[in-house]
Amino acid sequence: MKNFNYNIPTQIFFGEGKIEVLGKEIKKYGSRVLLAYGGGSIKKNGIYDDVVKELKENDVEYFELSGIEPNPRVESVEKGVEISRENDIDFILAVGGGSTIDCAKAIAAAFYYDGNPWDLVIGKAEIGKVLPLASVLTLAATGSEMDAGAVISNLETNQKYGFGHPDFFPKFSILDPSYTYTVGEYQTASGVADIMSHTFESYFSNEKGAYIQDKIAEGILDTCIKYGPLALKEPDNYEARANLMWASSLAINGLIGYGKDSVWSVHPLEHELSAYYDITHGVGLAILTPHWMEHVLNEDNLYKFVEYGVNVWKIDSGLSDLEIAKLAIEKTAEFFHNLGIPMTLKEVGINEEKLEIMAKAVTDHNEGFVGNFKSLNYDDVLEIFKSSL
Ligand code: NZQ
Ligand code: ZN
Image (tube, rainbow, N blue to C red; front, side, top):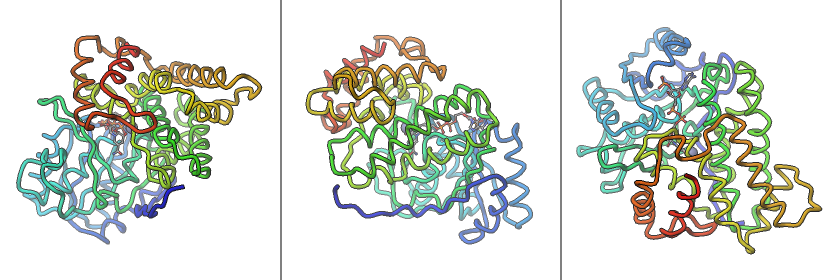
């Protein structure tokens, strides 16, 4: 196990009715709030009313930024900065899924930067001060509620990049599983795929001594396999939504990544698909993952796929190692398919046309090689894209 410094500063208020802490918690940090949300789901399901009631009862002044898109655009960040400056905002509250929370993080940094916020995303300018922020999570998926990353898209340049800063950790996040009852089948399934992919990105590493991290990772995968289908069948099953919600946070908050030096593989590839075709993140991951697994499987890492197959999918350990590995990959694809996720690029509107451009863009952005479980060069990436068609 490699050395690491544990630091997960986000305070979590988990469970039904936890919105009651909102006003009191915000007041520890500020009193003029930017209330950021997406395309209106929170108005339909009543979460907006709950939030506003808490703000009003606690005399917190708020100003709204609505319409944050899935795969949030840099233009929304600019709009948020403008509203925040005009109204002397000192705190940002994101109410939504990963897109809203990511946009809030970018606004929090860009608030103190005079140039175009995109400079901060691409690292052209350094992040200085960051406004304090918090989230009320409404979708179990990205883990943005408990991590220090944000992903912003620029559809004009077909770029979608992640960036981060220690001050991007929300000060607190409210995780009420009942707030995810209204998440539709497609987004629920996509969220499960995203949680599993975050777990794979840490689990499939060459570090052999991080046993405890791998056991936690297997537990998260097992949780998704048990509760993903149940949440689809019974959208208001509290136990299913609660387990998925906590899995969302644990998969990416550092817990399973500490002690390893994992450089992610499938996420950078998916971000190209979203950047060019604006597809749903988790769906892109589900499509690519089995093909990535098949592509990277070799004699050196076979043992890891055997561990995965036997411990997560309970495959008979009496089979040959290669049989177990292949079966584990098949089961992964079958699981996503059974969640109702389209499992080919063509089904989400992606054809051969831009595969080479995307393969070049992602390898260029990563100095020639993507990931480090088995580093992928341009040809590897292109092959994975082609086999995913
Ligand atoms: O916009 P609204 O109306 O809120 O509707 C959203 C949106 O249409 C809807 N939704 C959310 N909560 C709902 C709900 N509908 C009904 N009931 C609810 N309770 O779901 C749709 C998708 O929302 P979005 O926030 O886009 O989904 P997600 O949480 O999957 O976020 C995806 C974004 O996060 C990035 C992705 O790349 C993508 O841009 N990621 C962020 C990460 C991070 N910060 O650490 C890591 C991830 O790997 C990921 O890259
Ligand atoms: Zn993800």
